[in-house]
Length: 340
Image 1 (cartoon, rainbow, N blue to C red):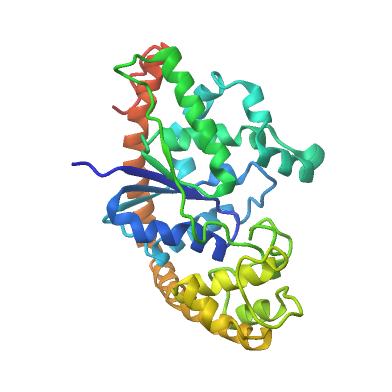
Image 2: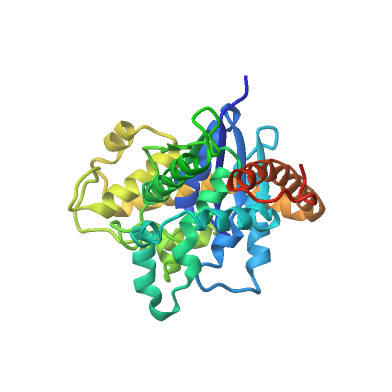
């Protein structure tokens, strides 16, 4: 029996942080043997906002290497670069032509980012969810790991599938597979160290808002020492008046691999002066093996290139099968140069 397929990816916009790892990548690693996994570095998405062309290529390699360092196993998973598979761009255009504009204009993330960018907002930012739909649909993904902030984009993907299948498919032969969300409840939304009400993000201007996977121990110590807290003694979860307390306890729970109940009992009588060193020690210990493995991977650049090239080839073969199916359904003349 074939395993259900998963598609997910991370943008190469700088180093990965604990939110990326605890909210997504660690769960990919833990569950990967149960699925046929395609994990891409979504560099096309990275240019929907102003980016640095001098660092994009190196950032792409960094993300691929961190996938491996975090435990993505090539026995179960394929790692590839989005822009190296041309089918992503072509399918995005085909989907654009059947996606109503008002579906995109209602996307919450577009509205939020457009406010920040003002007159610099690009068509690509508006169209981001259609490219994301193409990413997912090219691989006939059964499930898509998404955080709460990406659920609306997956709902749009499902709407596009239904529209395509209704207009161009048959009941017994749908053109595209309808994907389902795979949402990890615990740790799916790691919050900023500077503001416990906001998600930890690479786009935050302050480096003190996040712990990056490659931060050295002294930097981790500095960030946790400076992170926002409150004057109360005693630490507990789920208090809406103490979002930072809840967030830091959640980080400790996830990094120490303990239950919420065990952490609540351990930390109930602690002050911040006792808890912060504990969290620091735990974070450093949790990231040390990832950082060591990352160093080993980058030391053999040729092997990393080989892994990416092999992943690109496998992804291209799978993606072009779907692209051909969509082109046929939409009525295009077959392209004799396309790989079959």
